[in-house]
Length: 159
Length: 176
Ligand code: SF4
Ligand code: SF4
Ligand code: SF4
Image (cartoon, rainbow over the protein chains, first blue to last red):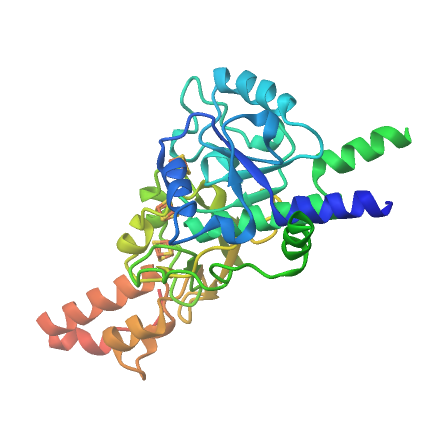
């Protein structure tokens, strides 16, 4: 890694841009992101900035139950996020389907089977500070080049 | 020049607003990390029955132990398990569960092993009652503390019979 790449990596950790993706959530997890951006929890202390489009994001926050239809949307939006990228899964829904598991159009499987997830934030919904902690961990992984997508690209280049 | 100063400041200075560790307090009644006390659990299964997302399950090692399993990635933190556990073996603490790297392990799953004990009368393996419950029911000395549920029923009916038929009291043996 040369000096410029190092500076870019540090800058990315010190100001990760995030975008939200609701994959079928009850809105509980999404509503916890709003106070996160307020002065009370103050995500900007870590340089976190919310962006409306995946094309500007470093970290995607995915909340909610995965459904047959949202699976395609997740894959589409994930593909639009420029490399390097990290995924943070919010709450119990992406991990298992939570109370919705077993419904006809719910995938009832972990988000890992759709896109590579770097950090799981437990809770239903998670506390804003837990989400912030998850974002900070993902930003650190991005700096170290250790997110799952970075490792996959790296392995892809080797082979 | 001003831009260079800003860039250097952004690279070198710590955060200028809150400290990351300086967070608003969690309310004392917050239902956060779940804890299970194997010494209080009777493996009755009530918690698994009331849990809507099926976050709690059991496995058995017949005659040796019963394991209580919990998967945090399936829990909706409703608190029904803690509310319905007859021996208060489950508690939802106010700590915020920390982030995790994988949904398969790394703190997401709890396992708690409840060891079976042989009955002091018939030898059948059973889950002992929690100490506090036994102290209330039989004090500390009573032989019934080590009994399995069947033998406890037998002992209770034997006591009842001896109250009605005092002469029969001598015939009561601690055997089947
Ligand atoms: S984890 Fe809970 S709060 Fe979040 S989307 Fe699922 S049900 Fe709603
Ligand atoms: S934790 Fe409580 S409700 Fe669950 S099996 Fe044990 S005693 Fe029963
Ligand atoms: S808190 Fe609710 S969802 Fe979680 S294990 Fe207990 S009963 Fe199940």
